[in-house]
Image (cartoon, rainbow, N blue to C red; front, side, top):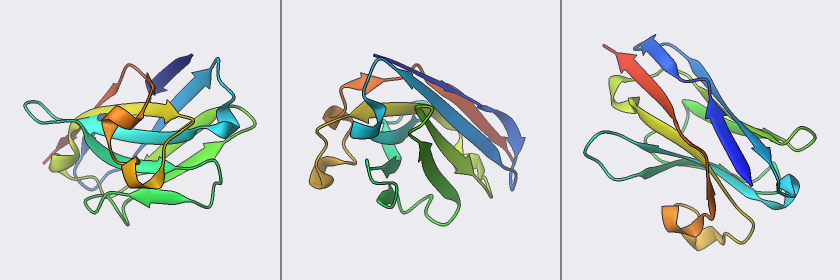
Length: 125
């Protein structure tokens, strides 16, 4: 299984970025796909998740209304559209996948078996 996240960069506050995560080696449509982020000196935190059903999405309170997670099962891709970015969104963003994630643990990093390498997002003020 391979997950490759890309699309990060440097953006001014109020700007937008779209992260992508390409997946291979798994039955993609069966997996919950999730974005986490980790800022320097902080723990990895949940950002957004999308279940096998594309109608089931979940967001952290800090990004709800600004970020949108989506997936394309035909090409094994998951996306994170980030709008109205803030300096506090600066972090390395990781995509993660698991086929057995239950709702009560969807926000927990330890619930995910597979991880991408991360992509840096830097938001300047």
